[in-house]
Amino acid sequence: MEKFSEIVYTRPDAKAAETSARQYLEHLKQAKSYEEMKRLFTEHVKENEMWSGMQTVAISATLLIQGMNFMRKKCSFSMK
Image 1: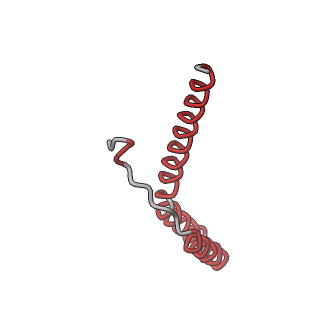
Image 2: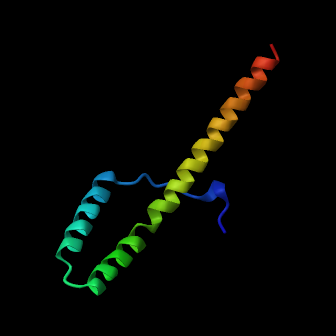
């Protein structure tokens, strides 16, 4: 497992994600069977697994930074 400090964050391409989602929905509308819809869904989930991981990294980093800033302010306030 990677160390948190070694995880590289890549900013998501929102425009590409939106285009991909629209294409996915269009393909679902055109699906002729349940099997085809299931295949499309499975492919879509696999393609978007990275986004979930990156979201977790971004949220964790943000919470860590906010917590550190809060404690810095609290400590500097109590020392005055």
